[in-house]
Image (tube, rainbow, N blue to C red; front, side, top):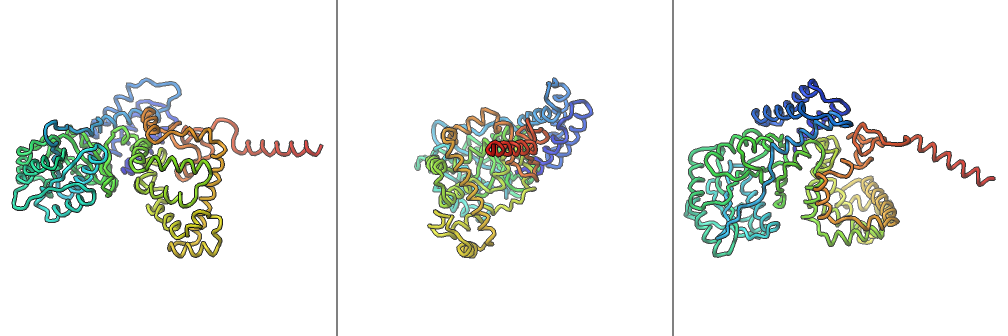
Length: 506
C-alpha cells in the first residue's frame, strides 16, 4: 500500500538524520516533499499548500535540545499529513424511524458492487445491523447477478424488481426493507465511464425519492487525480457525506488518498484493501500518515487480528507454547489464521522500519501457501512428532507438496529453532504469563501513538538488507547501542572462561 510514496518519504527523512534545522535544510526538504507528492499523483494545489504549511511550521518551530532535523521534520510532516487526510469519521447517521438509506455512487469500474457487499458484511458483523442490498445498476448487464451472488456468499438479502427504472427500484426497496425488518439499505447505483448529465439526473432522482442518510462516493485509488476530479464533480451534484477508496492494496500511488479530502471537503470513511469481502477497513488518517512515513501501523494490524483470530483459541495456543507442546499441527492452525489477515507482503508493510521497503525483500506473496502445502503433505504422526522425519520421509513430503527437499529441511530447521525459543519461554512463564490480550494490546498501542515500545522493531528483527545491524539499537539506524561492542563482549566472555579454567586447575 503506497510503497512508492513511503519509500520517498523514508529516504527524505533518512537524509536529514543527524543534521540541524536551518532555512537551507527546510527549503531543500520542501522541494523533495513536493517532488514526492507530485510523483504520487497528488493534486497540484494540495501539494503547494502542503509544502507551504510544512515550511512555515518548520521555520517557526522551537529547536529542542537533543532532537535532530530528521526527528523534528518527521513529526511536522506526520501532523500535516494527518490533518490533510483527516478527521477520523467512519460513523453513520442512523435513522431513528425506518431503515437507514446509504447511496453508493461512482464511475463504472470503481468497485461499487463489491464495495456494497463489503459494506453490508461490515455493518452486519461489526455494527450488528441487518442490511439489505439493492441492485439498482441497470446499465451493466452482469451487475444485478453479481450482487445476487455476493449476497448469497455473505447471507445478506438482495432486492431487485424487473420492469422498473432505477429510482423506482430504490423506492420499492425501502418498503421491502420495512417488511423484512432490515435497518440498513445499501443502494448499488449505476456508473458511467465518465461523468454525464444522464447519470447525474438518475442519481438526483434516486436521492429525491429515497432521501438517503449517507451518500458515499466510491472511487478507485489507482486512478490518482482522475478520482479526485470525479469526486469533485459528484459532490457538486449530490449531497456527498463521505468517500470510500477502493483498490488501495494495488499499485496505488497515493494521490487520491492525499488529495480527495482537501478538494471535496468530504472525509474518507473506508478503504478497500483486498479482494476478499472482509477487507474493508475503517480509515484512520493518523495511521495512514504513520505508514506513509515508514513508521508502520501496528494498531491496525492488531485490529485486523482481533477480527479474524479467535481469542479463546489463541489463549489455548499460548498455553501450549508456554508448556513447549506446540507441534506442526498447531503451527498449521496458526498459519491459516494469519492467512485470514491478508498477504505476507501486506502484513510486513504494517511493521515499523519496513513500510515502503517491502519490495526490497524477497517476498513473493506465496510463502505461507508453500509452508502450508509442505505441512499438509505430512502424516498426522509426522506433524505431531517432526523429529521422526528422516531423509526418506522428507523426499516423500517434498514430492507430495511439489516442493524441493531443501524447502522441507528448511521448514523443519526453523520449527526446531522456534521450539528452542519456546523452551526459553517456558523458563520465564512468570513474564510471558502476563501477556496482554489483543484488545488490551490494541488499546495500549493506540494510547502510545500506535508505535511499538522504543519506536520500532527490536534489534535483529530488521534484515540487514533493510538497514538492520546488530550494532544498532531500537533508537533506529545510526544510533549505536550503549555499552561495549560485540567483539569486546566476546573477548570478555573468552577471558572469563579462561579464568575459570585456570581456577579449577589450581
